[in-house]
Length: 382
Ligand code: COD
Ligand code: ZN
Ligand code: ZN
Image: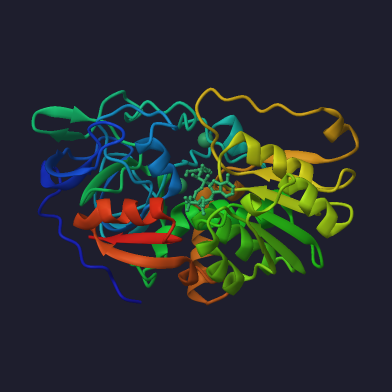
């Protein structure tokens, strides 16, 4: 096994490095020099090697997902542990790790439940942008800078709680493995864990971006025989078909609602539907596209702040299941290392989701690619 190289020279000292700061929403990120404090008890400082740009980062920048600014965004990272604070036992300097927005503390109600993964140690729905002690480890131009969900990967160094850091195999390919920190498990797990897609089934995936593509891979791995992909951007269709989508539909090309089109295509509705866009309309469409009696609809997308989902409750009375899924229901520290192993054994095809790679300093170009719909996943390399 190859041992990652690391230096302990910086341990205990403030590190000055480059980071992309989101000073306000609806503006480009700016690459600045930042000071990154040493990790406190229970914390880990990590040299970031790669980071994906996720749709949720974009939702923060466009103001639909609220988190305090200025902040260092990015929550889909891979890196090497530089130093650890007191009482950190699960990782050591030099370890290869994934940086994940949802912790697994192994002590809270959710973590102790066999099925729960929404750890109570991170308020994922109204993020406060600070470490658990209420402070931040980042300073820029004398100003304190928030983190994002205790992660912050758009920086050369970051500090995270040990409970959000996942040790992975020493031989994991660090350039690509970062998407196993958010986009891939979020989509893949929605299919294999949350919906438990069955062989021979019909699935519908709303949104063929990074997360929707991973849903498609999960449906395919679970043996679905028909996978209908929905997107308003037809440039997504070629890649989606390569991943396993059997029929691609653009809802804007139909005069009737897309749920009606799907009902007609599938006769009685799909077995499983997934919403990976984050709008109320597409959530309702996904629910109404699944079979009224045994269909399962999984909501993955984050809807705009304060929005409400409204639908006729009779849609559920007939037997449909409506559920949500966060990071694909994986308990991150227990389950994600196994996903990494399966990736390394080529049992899951993560690489086909990666369409672009850019040096970290070109981060704004990466966001442009995401917004233009030209990329599935863009990875930043540090
Ligand atoms: N109808 C059909 N397709 C649409 C529509 C619409 N009205 N609007 C947008 N789309 C398409 C876009 O063309 C695009 O292809 C796709 O939807 C969205 O993809 P991306 O690549 O922009 O974004 P993703 O796939 O990286 O992320 C999308 C989510 C909504 C899943 C993501 O933003 C999100 O909300 N994630 C939260 C879920 C979660 O568990 N988060 C944990 C940390 S992220
Ligand atoms: Zn994400
Ligand atoms: Zn917990």
